[in-house]
Length: 106
Image (tube, rainbow, N blue to C red):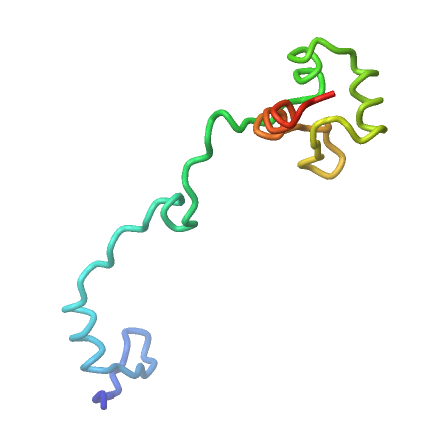
């Protein structure tokens, strides 16, 4: 159990001090440095090849028009796409595009 004593501060107020707390803080070692964000989350660094592409970039790679891409989306044959932000532009991950192409695109 800690020894608690009362001491008068310079302002005249009584302060409760603990003798064991004072010695413990004097002997306490500094805590280790924080781990990097990558280590804390347990994730690895994102693969550079798995970048987000806009519809315009995908259309340029496939040499198709935007209207064709929209038609494919309506028919359900386009590569998977999502809106990463609520009202943002439609985006396609490069891995999704490559997977779609390997599965026999159109």
